[in-house]
Length: 142
Image (cartoon, one colour):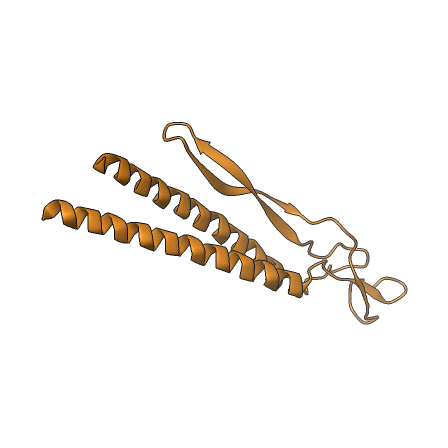
């Protein structure tokens, strides 16, 4: 029975760590989007920075039979680029409009907060599991 409990706790640690890794990847993409929200092209008609998104995928470790999440593909978001009237900009078209990135800072901040909450929840599970393992080890020593 003690081995079973330890294996369950090891599984919980593995699952929580995978969730934290996935959310870290998501936060990295959000940070890149926010850092580039004003990155326009350098010439007329040049494409500005395009918002990136990360997907998650299920992963089954066949050896341990643990199903976790892991970061999947990072792709670019489709959609049109908003235009801003700025005739003196080097990337302005003949009408004086500059194509700007399709990054909405409000959406990025919401994604960031969701990723942060998920990361924190996984960290809490990890800390609780570690505490339970420590108590189990302490009881075995007694």
